[in-house]
Image (cartoon, rainbow, N blue to C red; front, side, top):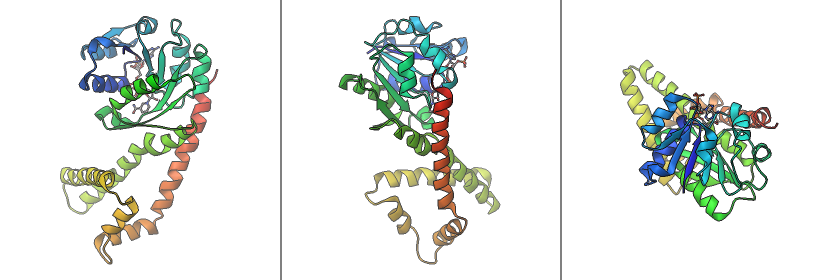
Length: 269
Ligand SMILES: NC(=O)c1ccc[n+]([C@@H]2O[C@H](COP(=O)([O-])OP(=O)(O)OC[C@H]3O[C@@H](n4cnc5c(N)ncnc54)[C@H](OP(=O)(O)O)[C@@H]3O)[C@@H](O)[C@H]2O)c1
């Protein structure tokens, strides 16, 4: 499988690095980017590079659109040499299938993805949605590309990608906010900043790992670590008093709404 990346930015480089680490031959990957700096970063990984998007896609079976959503329309429309024999994978946030289809030849197999930032460290969460032209081999190819940066799941309806955006797409920032304020509170309680950071990050990592491995729900895990009249209960009561659960739910609704609006801004024509 030969893969062409259109745009060799942060996300593309992470995917390429993951693909190489999982055994993909560097000679089967090419990245196109107008920036010499980005092409050098890609070339340093041992892959081929090109300044020209159409040159890059010529030999490729899979074409990954990895440019910013604002320029996706111009970039995709200018892929003159693309054919329906090639699978297009778009990671551009908010660019819907209707728009992608209108910019590409009829019957183009397209997989639209919503990755998240931890993909940059190989711990990403990507949701994928395929159009009707995508066959089982295309699905496997798309999984292989995105699994290079973490976990993947398929959603059955494209509209679910707005919900995915609200949960996992924007999700890292919610945890960063919580960590930021836990670190700050730790220093207010007398810890030095580095110690407070170490305690916070390892706790976040441990909690996520425990929740992933547990058979119980996260609500049960929370109950299990909350002894009556203990320290955790004192903290959680304060969070409830300050309506933290309600704030979290309305935050995700706001992200969902914004995702729908952005799709309209970046979409057709
Ligand atoms: N980073 C994330 O965590 C994340 C999460 C979810 C989704 N995404 C999506 O992934 C996509 C890429 O994000 P990113 O963070 O990797 O952005 P990025 O670092 O800005 O990468 C985009 C690259 O595309 C290049 N480019 C600009 N014009 C081009 C053209 N005409 N043809 C080919 N390449 C061109 C840019 O070069 P210049 O720098 O010279 O402009 C840049 O190197 C975005 O659509 C974003 O929505 C990213």
